[in-house]
Amino acid sequence: MRKTTGYRGFTLIELMVVVAIVAILSTVAVPWYGQYVQRGVRGEAISALQGILDAQERFYTDRMTYTANLTDLGLADPFITPRGDYQITARVCAAATPLTQCVELIATAINAQAEDGNLVVNTRGRQERILPDNSVVSW
Image (cartoon, rainbow, N blue to C red):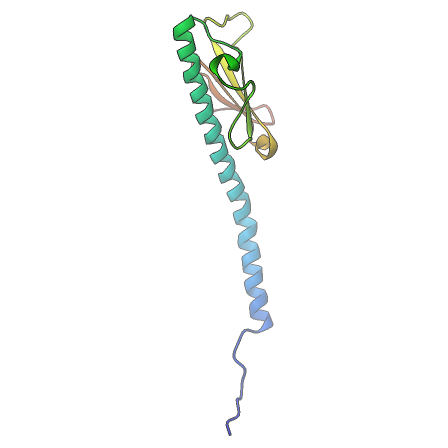
């Protein structure tokens, strides 16, 4: 008859060390992942803005003016991006500038994306992200 002298397996201390390591790694990784997701969603909004700007240019070619009403372009007004994280509207660029010269699109961040800021583009080349603290970043 054989006697086993020791048990094989993990001790409680070893398991607790592994749990602590996993907790530390997840504490670091989760915020990075959240920022990565926000950048991806922002990319979707930028793509939608570019599509609407293209539609605005086609509208301008036909009518020699831009439109502040997105329904004139065959879109909902306001336009909601497919994931539902941005609401896009159109307006005149500045008070003294007529729609025959410039139109501006504003992508307002909603839901979890709100902390990433709003996007603003216009037909004169403005491309900015307005952060929640009202600072402006060009993209």
